[in-house]
Image (cartoon, rainbow, N blue to C red):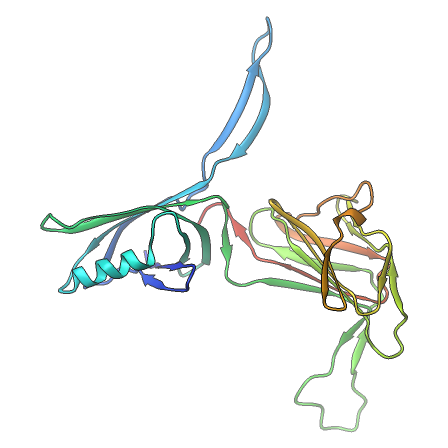
Length: 288
């Protein structure tokens, strides 16, 4: 099977581990499948069966086994040591004909046996974040006015649209990966005739479940709000006059950290007539 494997450290130094005849020969990559789940149960007193306490997925462990060949083994070995350092951050780029993803983790070990006739080694990487992420982000946009002007412009004298007025208050975004959190960026209308208060307590609904996310209070002209709903990194940040402020305390009671399910997702926006909203995510995969 064709694949490309590149390891990149926090400084941007890369080691191309893709199979070649004179450098690294990868014999096996373990840990590309979904990580193991941990399930905790307790027994009933005097009854058959048991009940579930909790269930979660363990961290991912990627293990790369390889061989080194050619006339520059020692130089390549030291280049590997410089890029892949125990306890340090590492980014694993993995690409096949059908998928182009990356995972982030920390190097547990980088062992090389260089006293045998065939120099071989093994790299173990622990990934607290269990997902592989696509390198291509996915965007969806909401706004009452959508730009329609494009180049080359029409050459005829017939009228052509500069923009399209949106009569819907919904937006769709497709998730081809597993269920995952995403980012919502709310921008205000900053045109000369825009109102000083762009919105008051806007609400974003999940059209399928009626779960919602609401920020109470006024959103002023020039404000930008960045919402992240990813597990382990849930934030609500207001940027006003170039100053960032945590406004997670402005969430209304009942608000839900919305996620993207597999397939098509539709969201409904109430109170956002003067807002431009960007929905952004990267497809995430438990296994590749």
